Image 1 (cartoon, rainbow, N blue to C red):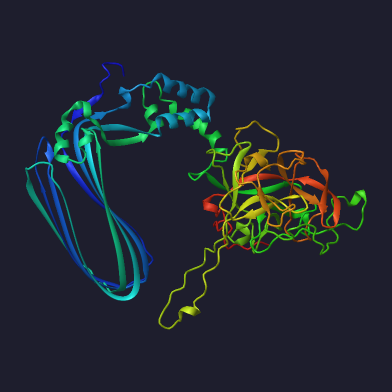
Image 2 (image 1 turned 90 degrees about the vertical axis):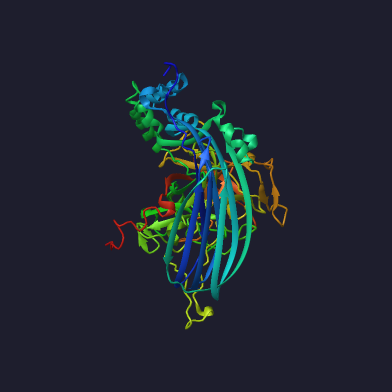
Length: 579
């Protein structure tokens, strides 16, 4: 508060040294152990200028036998913090008041229940508040040791290691000692190759930082108040909790809560700018791939076990009553080049069966086949006309357990690890006949799609779970172009929109008659016609031009939680038979 502007404080000159040893390892190991070790640590300390002197030594030996099979990558970091505190500052809520800029954002969150105001508060002022700060100076020394180990089976290992770390700031000292002893039995068989690299890093906060590499000369400079900095933070609380404790702002917490429900309605992205979703087909629902479309539900998906081969199909009666009827006959006449390719498709599920599991109650290949990792690299939530990448989420058998080897089982008789198909992403290419088709690629350069609200919207308008959306592909968004097989056998990569197209935007459509036989996932194509109504379009094929009716694809977007597992294996339906 303005009264003299000096917060409550306390003198703190309890200087100290903190040394921390950190080790991080990744290992796969099968072992029986019989371990014996002894460790001793000696520390000496004393000081002047309120400064301590620290000397630490550690010695450990181990004699172990281990039967193991592992690969390990170990990183060990020794961190020494030389803390020279001068005072503690207490920032209690009753002693504070928000700045005019902060008040403006609080009023916006209160009056408009604005998501943007909540984000602005977090962006500008953070999400946490420290009620206690320590001012002074700090010298940090980091010693990092990286060791790459390749451990093999059948070797008796005997290891001895010693580590000594010392740091001295003044010539005064005292002594303390600690002795620990422990015995464990270990039986270890392995051979080890170790390649060790060491690096040292020095960093100063506060004091004369130019002297960071000379601790003895740097220490006296911490006495100057002009060189004090924040070296420690304690008593963390959320920003909103802190504000609500300020006089006159007791209701601030409710302002945030009222804004957050609106935030939760929208499709939010995780820290990697991605979210797992399904695209439920809203329209069309007639004349799709399964035998009885009346009780079938369809989703945008991909089939890792098969590919798409567009064929010349038709119906037996060409009357108005037969329009949109199911395809009555199929042929083996392929209509495009390339004839067969990997592509997204529309999966239909009858009688609520997802593979062998009703209602998707078990995580299986069919469950994963309709799931997409939607990546929006240019925002933290999904909005109208957001640029996104659509990646597959390959099925990984959760019941697979790596086989163990024993003396009685030969290695070549062990079951093979299941092959997980590579993650791919949706792209667009033009075939030799000039038709743009959606496809799947595992190239590491992505193509972008646009998510558009079916009902229209303004750019930047958030998309909620359950909204009806369309998928649009725009030439100007592509940084890697598209593959074009027209007049080119290799499928050259192009960036320009062909001049004969009506628009630079392409939309997902399903053709009628369909490209595939019954009970086969429905194939799709791209069209420059932006209308959501049925439109006629002449497609060039290997057998000549044919007129097709194009139905616009509209989806309901649903998020899939639990890292893609959703509600599969949920107790409510797990193991329950359906009549």
